[in-house]
Image (spheres, helix red, strand yellow):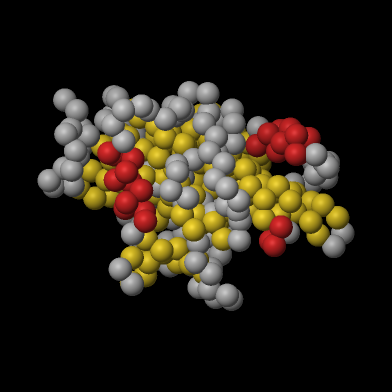
Length: 271
């Protein structure tokens, strides 16, 4: 399971839980730990205005896997109200490790910690998907959401999930968006991030934006991995994303994966 998400959104955090992804009650120490780790990082533009992204401390989604021992969350970073990066992070009580998987939704970002750049991707993790078979964005928010859900549902995404004995999983589209936002300064009328999950753990995302252009309103769509496992995405039968397994990523990789054994483990591990 890979976990790390960074997303940038405009406006007040709009946390939406899928039907079976409600936050767990009780001990919040693991979630607090994830937030603390991500707050130590800075995501910013490398060119132009060199704006710094804002981390939304409230996760877009949390999950627990009692079988593997993982407790994780998905987080978003925003610039001028627009989602620009995602991070999925988790700790694992059985294996006593910390994992984060980070993606960017646009080119020209870098992540730093303690004043040093730790990730400077040469290209965006997300891949653009042309949309020519959907009517222009509707006037109402409710109408646009119906269109965006239809568009998200037109993807088929699968990954090779597991360690050593990988299995092919057809990922499922979560019933509600992970995040919805507006970014008028970026010509984004409406934006949503949909998750495709293995169980309750998002392994891929589809980002859909209704944008204002000189010729009218149009759709902008991207698909991205949110995992280090090999993943293939299709739309209307055409392959739009096909990425290999990536356990070890470099400073300039488009996808960032961090695996760290925690010794001592900062929590009372479940037996």
